[in-house]
Image 1 (cartoon, rainbow, N blue to C red):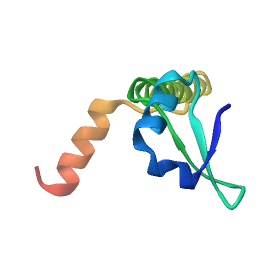
Image 2: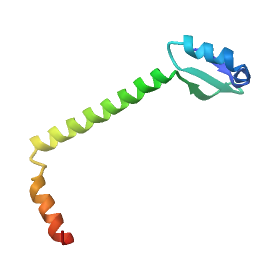
Image 3: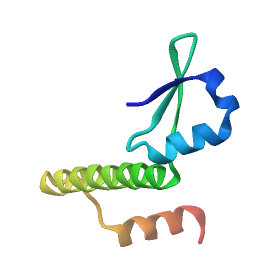
Image 4: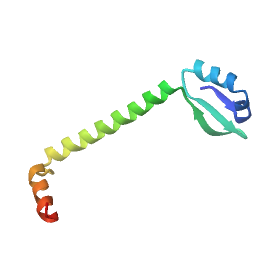
Length: 88
């Protein structure tokens, strides 16, 4: 992983070229400690998509476990109960 000190951000053209060439996020440090990462837009899009997929798989797994153990209810009955409760 490429690491640069925060002072290098002054040269935006150089930093932009560095981030464009990097295959991974670029770590920016301050006083030798990690401060933040710079990523290309397509890398960020891919990371967000991976996080969404992971959450979806997690929810599907949980739903399948609940269904298998009988921990579920009928949506239509639930909606009807909510309507009655709130006078809709």
